[in-house]
Amino acid sequence: MAENKKLKLAIYWAAACGGCDVAITQINEKILDLIAVADIVFWPCAMDFKYDDVRNMKDKEIDVCLFSGAIRNSDHEEYAKLLREKSKSMIAFGACACIGGIPGLSNVTTAKESLSRAYLEEPSAPNPDRVLPQLKTNVAEGELTLPVTWDTVHTLNQVVDVDYYVPGCPPTPALIATALDAIVSGQLPPRGSVIAGTKALCDECERVKKNEMRVSEFKAPWEIQIDPEQCLIEQGIVCVGPATRSGCGAQCPKVNMPCTGCFGPPEGVDDQGAAMLSAIASVVCPGADISPEAALDGLRDPLGTFYRFSLPASILRRVKTANKE
Ligand code: SF4
Ligand code: SF4
Image (cartoon, rainbow, N blue to C red):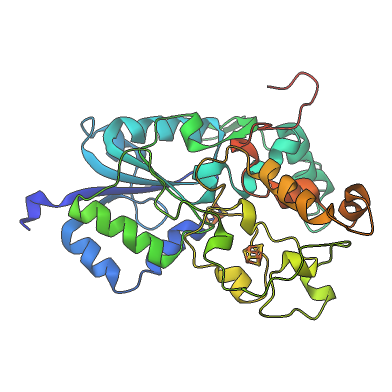
């Protein structure tokens, strides 16, 4: 492919941990195939680019933007909108961009309370002067500003139009390779597609041994000797597989860890947490010795378990607090 025909690829992160960027490097030698056909024109976490480099581009000059991270402050919103304007295809890359991810759990509180927790109450970060981040600070060189943190964390598609979704926390190397192959070959699926499976994770899970589904107590994985062949839910471990999209190869259940739901809900399911609650209710109720309420008492963090990655994309979206969005 001639040099001037190379695809232009942008990679950006908003409210993200950087794991999605690391995952891109984990495609190993496939990255050589990518750079043979694509120029990376913006990837500030890996190379020295300036925002003005993007501002100076023509609209739709970038072929594909891989955008990881949720949207939780004014900067994230500004750069999501800028990259959308400059990109032909916008891909929500990873759980945070697709469904809100771990940052979305702060939708149980407010920005003020989150900052207070991180800067004033966190025992591992002493702050004797009780200094909080200021939106404006004057220094000798001029005024420094910080973005405004929102009370509500948003998914990428709540802020800009998204063309494709690559789920996972982070997306698996196999899934990234599939997405990049589709980009490079121009064989992208219909707009709006999630590049993963469509069914629930249980569909591809190899834990085939299933007895009578009846659970009277929930436990953490380290509290029992796990049968490596039996469904984890049947063993009293909350596995979010029934309410999670397939496509990762059931990597967590394979190593005795329950699925935590990072691929988001399967096709046709609007609310992952509600679907999981319903799955749990169906295994507790029939013939169990205790009521669903009593069984759920053993569940240490229902909201953080059922909506660990998807609260901003759920019907609830956030916990209601007085005077909040
Ligand atoms: S999806 Fe997971 S790996 Fe990617 S930025 Fe969010 S928390 Fe990090
Ligand atoms: S609930 Fe979990 S362990 Fe059981 S079949 Fe589904 S994915 Fe596998």
